[in-house]
Length: 317
Image 1 (tube, rainbow, N blue to C red):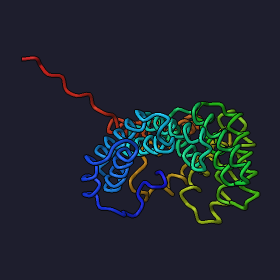
Image 2: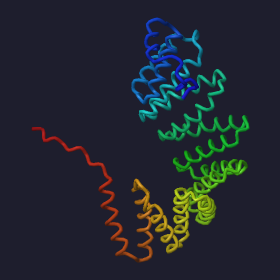
Image 3: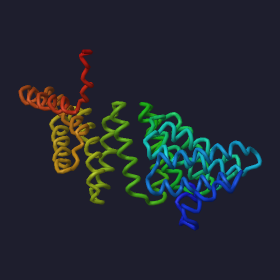
Image 4: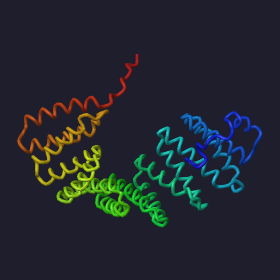
């Protein structure tokens, strides 16, 4: 959160509450902000949110007579509390106001909060906003000489383009991020880009390019014993094999992915269903109909168990 949010206490919470009737204006707003910070640290986000909103209202009423940083801090506090309450759209909207104020005042913390904002826009599935926000961040990071920061920004832009099914644009972003990560010898992050490049090539039907990119990422993750990421890279490799009509190889690769995740807890049933559904399609292409039917039957049971039942309707009597 903001620089003061969560700092070591210099006065007690009781002293802050006692101060409220005695102070006005900026000092009153700051007191509500400090109380919000203390209560946020205890995990009482609804109460902390209400206090941060009070601080914002006071700063807003003061207008130009109050420092803009105070209003920005209040908005950022509102954003952090809303984020904890899983109200992501509202959190991002509040943080965007904080960022705008801080950028106007040339504050050095504007960039940090803008990066947080981009991540929140991503969580709320507002991918166009992600692209807009993180592009600005990437340019500022490059001006500051922060190559890793710019690479992370470009990686998130690529993820947003991928969610929007702009696969060619996503590939360009991931390739740019890869170059910057490579400059800084960020080997795992280079491989993360390769894995995502592979996934995009699969989506646009470029099987050979997908296979090459996936292989690179598998090599790094296997060497690093990063088995979780290796699993997703192998998944892309198997999809590429199937795209290239290497059906037996693809089926074997996907089955290998299932074996790797067999011991994972909790079970990622969405991922398992995705893998096995693809395997069923390959089985049918290979003429293994009975086997495919049996897997389909089993997956239907799992899907039914995952479905949310509608609330029972009252009879009205």
